[in-house]
Image 1 (cartoon, rainbow, N blue to C red):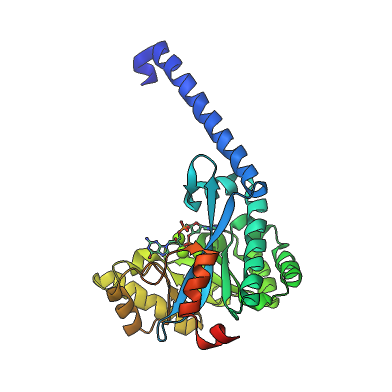
Image 2 (tube, helix red, strand yellow):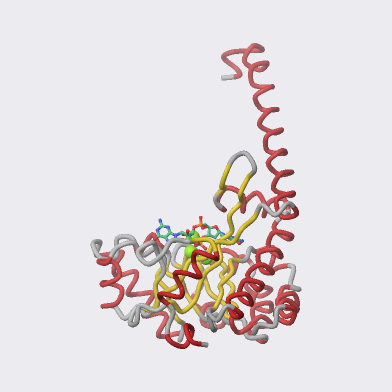
Amino acid sequence: AAKVGGRGTYRFFQPAMTSLAVERLNFEMQLRGAVANGELELFYQPKISLDSGVACGVEALVRWHHPTLGMIPPVEFIPVAEATGIIDALGDWVLEEACRQLRAWRLAGLGTIKIAVNVSARQLQQSDLPEYIASLAQKYEISACDLEVELTESVLMANPEEISGVLSRLRGIGVLVAIDDFGTGYSSLAYLRRLPIDVLKIDRSFVMNADRDESDGQVVKLILGLGSALQLAIVAEGVETEAQAAFLKSCGCTTAQGYLYARPQPAAQLETWLRKHAGPAAASS
Ligand code: C2E
Ligand code: MG
Ligand code: MG
Ligand code: MG
């Protein structure tokens, strides 16, 4: 277009590009301030034991309450946070907030609900993550055994040797390790067998049609088989219908997460939900 339109087009494009760059910089500055200004909140979505219907844990999912734009979902700011290094402060905040909430739920009589936190490549590569989590567990008087980290295959496989060391140290303090969105990346079976991993979360894209599409159903079964071969727990994500849940159960899947059971929600709301759905141990202790 620049060639066809000549200089006129060029002049037309210049301010547009500049304003985009300004907008991006603005967004970045606002995101940088979001942690300090208390604009972030953790929502929580339960993980359900399919036999009992009881919640066995929750996943923390960050939300940004932007002062003018309203609530921004993580897909729109986590990549920016990762690209700019803001993820360091943001990730630290998420971990601390999850630990604080775990302690608050414990004091509120909710017993031993586990919390899973999503972590980015950069957080794992900075490698003081195990020490940081250990210090948080001490500060909030909780057990690191009640914490789980979720990372994607791409994070794992980009640098398996280095990440492996960090994961071993996380496991050493009791933190569980889950591979998120499993099946969408390029995991090497050799590494999956060797790496310190506890859980595979089957990506929603397979779960979505598993009960209706033969090959998606086979992929789900394959991952469940892989889980039992490697002694990994399997969680199905994005379960939205009873038919999907029934299919998963029939294949021997034990744990699921999705809108069918509960949407991600603020802590106070989830606390009410948990009181209705937590197991007897969690409800009474
Ligand atoms: P994820 O960890 O795979 O989380 C699952 C996403 O699927 C969540 O989106 C959740 O709200 C959504 N979901 C859950 N059940 C269903 C369902 O039944 N149907 C559908 N359609 N969606 C469902 P959300 O909260 O927007 O988060 C998106 C992604 O952002 C997460 O994917 C995770 O990769 C990332 N993320 C969220 N919080 C954090 C965080 O604190 N730190 C980092 N590094 N990443 C985060
Ligand atoms: Mg996750
Ligand atoms: Mg996922
Ligand atoms: Mg995902």
